[in-house]
Image (tube, rainbow, N blue to C red):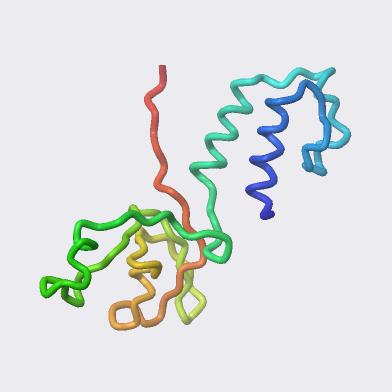
Length: 140
């Protein structure tokens, strides 16, 4: 389990039990949850942030893809090489170029591959991390 998932699981455990028991978060072992009440809205805010705003290694997970409108044409005479079966939503990505330079870009996957890693368009780039685009909620 990667650290992001461990943090999420541990915070969810804090919501389910009034005291620290087997949450897995090592840094929390000396914290007495039952004696120092933690604001519940802060835990929910942290969970939302971690789930939606954290960088995810491409080695751990890729963005979820959905079927495109072209998928139903696969195997017919209307299918052509410019069409795709599945595509992810647009996400932020951290890319690394051959010269070691890193930058943040926007990209999406097409049939399980990053568009930015297409050798005919971007031959010197690889995606290292990705995250969902931030969602901004107006203040109440």
